[in-house]
Length: 293
Image 1 (cartoon, one colour):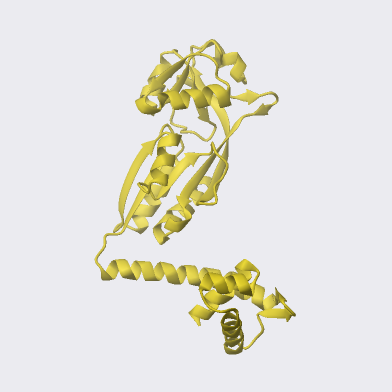
Image 2: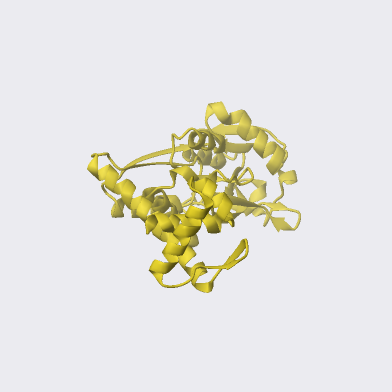
C-alpha cells in the first residue's frame, strides 16, 4: 500500500496522471490502476474522475494531507533504523549568527540535549555569509541566520521572528537621552560590528548600503568585545529589542527608526530540503517554540 500511496501523492502533486507516471517511471495506465487498487483497499473514492481531469474528494483531500505526514515519518524511521543497524553516531551540525544576543538559541539547545543526550552536537558561529556558505557546502545541517536574500526553494526557510531593531550606546553618550534615533543621525558615530576579519568588508558594505550607517566602522570579534567598546563610549552597536536582557546597566538601548516606523530584522532557521532529517526538524521546532514565547 505504501507504494500506491506514493503514486497517489505524485498524481495530486503534479495534478496530472501523465506527469506522475513520468516521475514514478511507470506507464500512465499502470499508475491509474494502482490508484484504483488503493481506493478499493481503502473502501472509498479518493478522486472524482471527469474525462481526462480529476478532483480530490473530501476524503481524498484529507487522506492526501495525512499521507504526507505518514510517508515522511516512515522515511525518518527508515533512516534512523539504518543508522542503528550500521552503528552510525547520530549527529547534528548547527550554526548561529555571530553577535546574536537572544536567549532562544541557548534555550533550544538545552531542550534538545536534554531530550537527545545521545546525539553528538557540533555548534559554531559565523557572519551571515559564512553561515550561508557552510550551509551550501553541507558543512552545517541547520543555521540560525538573519534574512538578507529572497527565500530559495532549495531550502526550508522557517521565519522565527521579525525583531524590532535598536542600537546600544553608553549611558555617557549624548544619544542616551533620545527616545529614538535614525541611521542619518548616526553618521558621525562609529558603528560597531561583530564579525571575523575575513568578513569585515562584506559586513561593512551591508550595514552601509542596506542599513544606512554612513559613518566609520569598528570591528569586534565577539559580543563581549563589542560591549566593552560600547561601554567605552566609542560607538554604537546594532541589535534588536529581543536581545540579551543581561546587558550591562551602563549600556542603553534605543529604538532604530526609518521615518515613522521602527526598523526590523527577520531571523530564520534555514536547512536544505534534501537534508531534512528527524533531528534537524526537531531542533527547528524547538527553536520555533522558544521564539514564540
